[in-house]
Image (tube, rainbow, N blue to C red; front, top):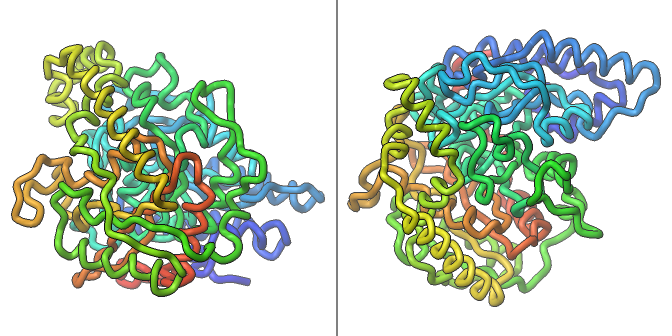
Length: 486
């Protein structure tokens, strides 16, 4: 029988196999994770609303189902954290805001519904910045989420708690969402695999789709749901469960015939793929250590995986301002400005500031035109390449309590500028994953972003799995786990 520590370090794929085979009890799995949570949460604050009673009841129900000969799903007994921007029926959803501190939804998000149907057991809600309008892990309501690799640093966001939870073994998988990098950011900072599948691959509802919720209803043309996991296979397993069209999301797309995320990661990467490597888009400020780590990692594709790698940039101009115009276009300004008036100082300062701007129609139309320009540059560029690789983020993890560094590589930048690599890929809707590229000299994770052509999620998954096989990372864990003890 696996120990509690072994259960917490086990991959979701293997955990579900053992639960289905009656080799491991789902009750033991849940108990092991909550015991670990009791030890680590005083340091990490990954879960804003844990649900131990609900999780144990579901584990008991699942065990009865298995004992009576039932056929549990592909995630049978796998614990999962749910980002607190996504609804879980009957569980408080705060969205990091005092405006929603007592809100309990009466329905599941589509992705949550599908994870539950596949046998996953919800551990609770993971912490987020207010309404997800940030790339870090603090909000006005809950304790600040910290990075398991160094608890003085941010885990990234907005899927902050999901990243910290998976990186520390509080569940092998977690649900994230990504409107400007919010799956890829914490996955990069926490040493995980994270994927923003193609726009519409995983349906969103009620998140970003329901006008009843002013703070949650936004970013429709930018937002993606994605898996966060320690391994590519676990991420592919999550994606296989969550993907597919749904009439609640008008942008959702059906699964293409023959595309299966788990099948996509099998087999060797085709030889001779053309890979573009852009270290800075041709304009971005990038930390020297990030350049070094990712520059070494990308060589794996040429030296070990049979690809042709070229230094090349898509050629679009910096779309930073345009991205924020799109965010405002997708924001319920009337609803959120009303909340800002009511909350006053209880709302995050950076959020109040953006709501106070006197946005003009031209700001929005300029943003739309910027997106068109970025996409047109990108599709033309990608016709010459099978994959595009960049750093995931411009910097390693930084201290908690700020929105981002104001200086990168001796260059003064805006607080959110460190997101230069993730933002454009939300504007284009292409599939993109982050994989751990390596570590800084101080032992902090650095991510590498792998971007595919329009709808070519399969190749992004296969390339991620091939890199993982060549440079495995799953057995490297944060020192925090050793310091806290079993």
